[in-house]
Image (cartoon, rainbow over all chains, first blue to last red; front, side, top):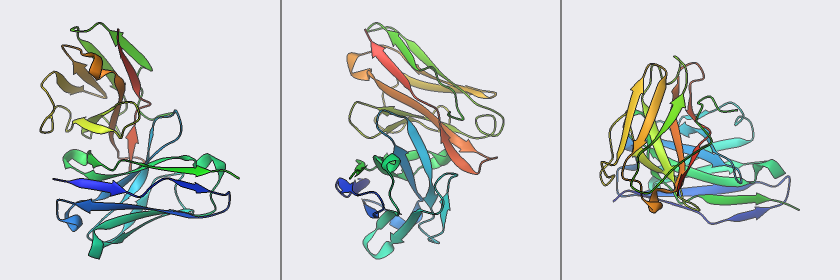
Length: 118
Length: 110
């Protein structure tokens, strides 16, 4: 069965960087795009962008350019989200999700809580 | 402020029916498929409707979706206490070249 398993919670100081992993299994990794979605505490879902797992080409939504980087290691079926120069308002749960038909996100990771605090 | 507009909350009694609306524009709902997601407290979102009205395997037929013009609607019949969750609509926005979500609707089953 399709599974996306994300790395564990992170506590970071302001200005630091974090790298969240999303390991996929149960399907051919390079056949489906990976989305990244942010959810700040008590808030709704925010689409951050996506990465083409075949070409490795990332696309970032407005507000997620510059400090946010999507990457892949196809040898281990894993997608990564790196955030640099962390700020307090980056505190959120970050989800990876796999494309399904009609641009939907059919499968989701369990989420990774990133807390930015001194 | 979300590109897609949903009511903040809806409520209904167990066994009853509820609908949740999602309003957009021609650049999103009007020309792209709508998906619906259920997020139970403390868990990741789960896809319950895709391509406007299709249900993934394992989603009961108590859940339905429809789309008309620039709006979409999620329907849930035979409400159960286990349906209490936040529900989000989502679609692609061709003008933004990005995915977009509604602000979410909290369903209470009283």
